[in-house]
Amino acid sequence: MLLLLFSPSTRLRVLPKHAHSNCVEERAQSTLKLQPRLLEGLQSEPILFTVADKFCNKSYGVHGELSPTDARQTIDHNLSIFSAGVVMYSLLFRNDISWNLAMALGNLPWAFRALGDLLNESSKTTGPSNIGSSLIFLFASAAAYGGLTAADWAGNAFKAASLFALTSGLPCLFAPAEASKLWEMKGATEMTNGMITGVGVTLTGFGAFMAALAWGDDVITAVGKKAIVDMLSLIKAMYFSPEWASLGISKAAVYFWLILNVVAAYSILVK
Image (tube, rainbow, N blue to C red; front, top):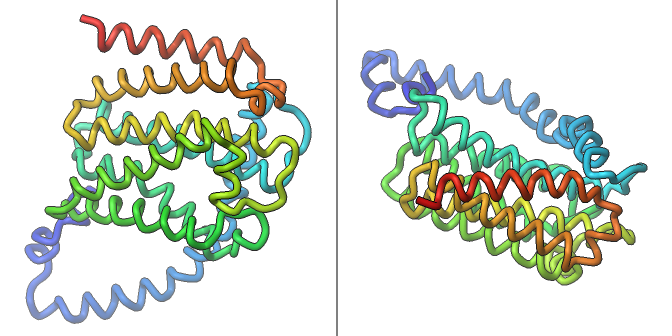
């Protein structure tokens, strides 16, 4: 159904010529009516993640109330997992979703996230800077639009967005303090660098997964490569990142994901 809605040829075929101008006018009026609701949704977006964030923190052994800056790191951590999961589900279990549409759906959450930050003026409270949010929105929205419209340049947009995610995740994983300064995060606490390290773990995995798909891997192979990246990232965070260890992360939870990633990578990539 989504493919029909976003296909230009379908729209022209369904609408008679004399009705096209009326339809455009009605669509514009509907968009204007929808805008206030859309803005309200974007401005309340952080609330939607509250329950999931608290569950995520408790499952990893992180207790207590987080500052707004640290809480947004948990949102970004979960958003990488969610975005990758949407793409996996679309390509593995939905025959009615094309590859272009799946890639678009994987980038949409980040586009909305960045747009929400810009509308909420997050640069004044928690960060990132407006330049940072604008870059995220630029790459993610271009990939989403290219995928939704099946544009000729969509493949290049997917590659650019995946590389941007990957190169954004690596500094968070290996140099969280510098990454915090780079993105101009505000209101940092003693936990912030550790939380940014967690973002680096999942964002690097998401970027690697999307890059594998963008450069032609099938979804199963891409999942296997993501499992390797996730495994290495978790090892780096758990054994070589004192910032992450200072959070009191539960090793049992980390070992669960490590074992799962090892099994996935071996079963998929080792012939």
